[in-house]
Length: 336
Image (tube, rainbow, N blue to C red):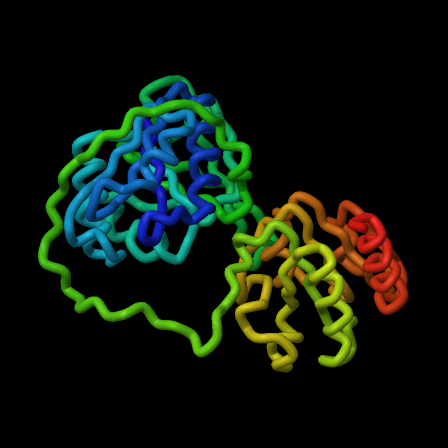
């Protein structure tokens, strides 16, 4: 069995959980394992019916009145109990801030480790694992790939010892819209949550609303090639024409030309939109690791040798101040 973590806030789904479902379904198909989704909640969560519309064996609502608001202690208690009862081979999660907060705690309680921030996997005959025993009790194991040294190298990882094996996948490693539909039964499991060691307060709110670029389907991002803060208006116009969100590389945010919540890269957000348009971005590795999983990458840069073109699906070698107005005009024509 594979357990997949469904992240939510007040029963509103975090869409990266659909990517986790896709990953779990793929692993389950390759290893012959059934997939069960788990939702931690303080009530009969309405989200359970939504998740039940996917190809899963069942959906478990781990229920306790202390699970209405996320706490690492509460979630760790709930997940520890679900894992002990269900005895899964794998626990699959998206590599979100919340998962990074509580998943290592659960794994440590069970004497396991988390293989985190993976970008893909492959199956391998257990004989190839040498000192590593079969991870499923069958003939196949998993080799998990994660990026190291700011994405400059890929490392293959195999976990040994007894199950369960905890795996988290980087945002964009799998497509949420590729999760297979189906019909699953919903089951409620009452769990015990011990006294919480922290006092809950109202969630922190920024003075102005921040943007979650991980949920964006189209992103227009600007880099040094935009030249000045005043010129960002042209990128915003393109974004408005496309119904896209505006983002930036680190130098733009460091200069306070755009707020830090718009930054893409190793020190910003990691995104996987359907379309990513890079304007005047050279393609430093620190930026690429944050957007390389976009379905379609379009780059505009005067430098034909810019690294961004190595990963772009479409590219324009030219002045963005000449190319972008033409794009905006053509987009408006197509919409009219």
